[in-house]
Image 1 (cartoon, one colour):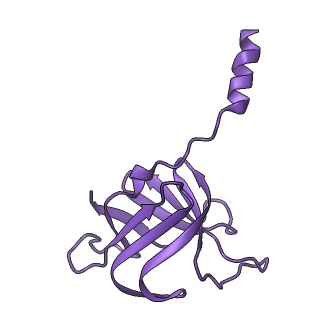
Image 2 (cartoon, rainbow, N blue to C red):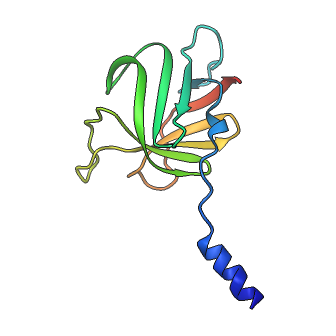
Length: 136
């Protein structure tokens, strides 16, 4: 009886939601070994909506990307785990090999460190950006 109850509880346990405290602080990212948190670098702050449906990314200066030139990006949260958010950026036009809009995973690999990966890449593959928390 006890084994049945324990198994039933394990099967029906809700997934652990994303820990929003992982987003706190000011972030910078790098593609090389240069100092990441020096004053001349660009810094980012991220804010997850209370319902975990939207992520806003605020940059301290205008940034050019394939999504345009802006200092703010917004995305819909497609999925979450305890340590990652799967996102689709607003105004996304890029498509993957299957013709679907590109989605990205923001993965926290250690406290104060994140990596990005496109969801249709092979498991374990990430891009060259390493995000580092520079201040709380």
